[in-house]
Structures are given as structure tokens and as C-alpha cells.
Amino acid sequence: METIPYEVVEATWQEVAGSSVEEMIEAQKRFIAQQPNIVEFVAALSEDLGEKVAELGIYLVHLIWRVFERAGRDPAKTVSLDQVLQAFDTRQTWLVQLARIAKDIPEAEIEATDLKLKLTQPYLVRRVFEVFTGETDPELSKQDRAYLCFIMLAVIDALDQ
Image 1 (tube, rainbow, N blue to C red):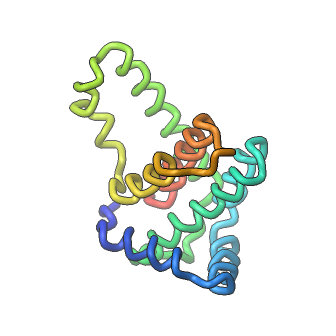
Image 2: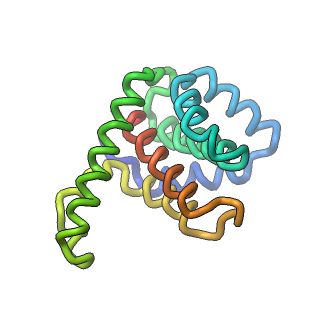
Image 3: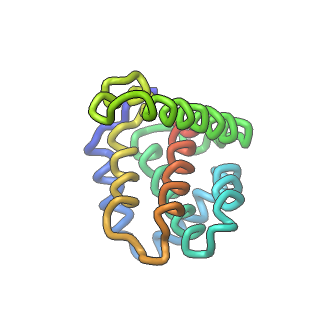
């Protein structure tokens, strides 16, 4: 799909950050109603990680969905569970390939590989990465952050179909 502009990603991030509690609750209800499979997927994968991690995961997928909505993507189009699982499987394959390449290629050359081109929404992905690389709750381990980030990549891929 077409790349969502940086300005749309940032405007959505700011809009959500400035939302009242009531506005967030209403938007969250709308998201859950329109994307139950994404919510189920994220909840299932994050349930063993603890309540804070699960809450962050649901918040972030809601935010990602809002970016797609603001970009003019059809928010009423429900992503199927098969689409989410396929995106997750594809992203897992990508990660395994990246790990194999990382063993054989010096770090400075990894950016030159075709794998970096697999990030179809670079501005959105960068914004999600910033959540996990910036100051975070000390209760979130590096492993939890990496796993949630991986889940978010799969959700972006599923929504971008």
C-alpha cells in the first residue's frame, strides 16, 4: 500500500496524546468493535507478559489503527484473524532471515540489504520504535519491549494489506 506520510503519523500521535479520557474510551470502543481480531491477537500474545505490557500493546495497536484511519484507509474493513496470523508468520520469517544475515554481514552493511525495504510504513514503524527505545516503564524488560515491537510490526503489516 501507499506510504502514510510523516505528517499524518505525527498529527495522529499528537491528537491521541491530547485526547481526554472520555475521548480515548470512545475511540477504544470503536477500535475494539471494528478490529476484534487484532485485539484478540495482541491480547493472546501479550497475556503472559503481564498486565502493563498487555495494556501497552492494546494502546499501541489502537494508535496504529488511528494512523491508518486518519490516512484515509477504510476503518470499517475488519482485518481477519488469518490476515493477522499471516502477517505475523511473514514477519517471523523476515526476522529469521535478518538474524541469519546479521551473523554473516558486518553491522554497517546490514542497512544495504533488501530486508530494510520490508518496512512498508517507515514513518509509522519509526514512531513505534521510538516508544520502545525511549524512556519506558522500568517494569518493561528489553525482551518484553522487543516482543511487543515485533507484534506491532505484524499489526502494521496486517492493516496495510
